[in-house]
Image (cartoon, rainbow, N blue to C red; front, top):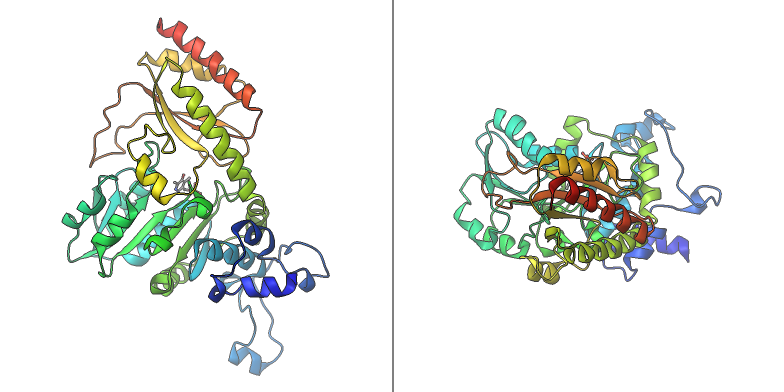
Length: 404
Ligand SMILES: *Cc1c(COP(=O)(O)O)cnc(C)c1O
């Protein structure tokens, strides 16, 4: 039965199979009967693939031809993400940023215009400002809350609308269906960075986006030990993106794919726990008088809560909060003596992280007017009371240093 199911689900045509996402995550991308009964698809290392005969070589008659063009360990990951995102095909990249850059290079060329959400991940912006501009692509940033008013920014040479929802650092939720409607039937690729919600909680392709990218580094991997990215496209755009991907020579290590496949097996249960803890921490912060604001779209007070409730089925591990204004030494006091929250970039691992945020050059279409000191937290899998007391102690140090 499992064998049949795996055959069934590894075929993109069967994307309407009745198996739930947890079943896809636990069963797809491995076929024990192909590997002497061992549960997992092994790491297949290799560049060269040998053909049995001259005829086979000429006919290209083998599932794999060369390491860069496909590998069984990599395909295991590809199949799972394609299925979960309801995509036509998925490409694997060595980082989330390379998923974004490869996609933008595939859809926008010299003389074209692209629309980028103002709250996009900062390195996305950096890629646009450097490589895209140097290639004569006209880059324009838009207010993430623009909705259907994006129609006023669309030009005859617009080729891409990049979305990220909720936005990095500031957590605005985008009205993707309104953007899709404004785009109409024009040949403009709507790209969605879906790293925060994962396909478990948000399905941009089903809402009319064309290409979904992931920083697999974050929730897919889940253990802070691999850099990885994915590009999942619908049928209309898959070949175009693949052509650029292939021409650029982008590929990933099967060792990394193995670890991503391993992370994916527990994605659903990890997401549930991260979601529950993040929400609980957000509510706890909201009740603390030293906290000015909490930026979490699942909270009813969030300005985009209605859009979030309409389009998402769950929330992620990451959100922001601001504290009453205080000098930087108070921020240092808070951060320097934390016992559990690590201070570092990235997120998505099993461990909690906190990062002080300043919004300055990362915004041009909107203004960040909040006065308080901004932080971003990734809520990990530690004991919840331990996490709260770590922050509570930090807040006491902050108050003391700021004389609040
Ligand atoms: C981290 C991140 C990326 C980039 O992923 P890397 O693997 O670090 O290149 C892209 N988008 C979002 C939303 C991210 O948080």
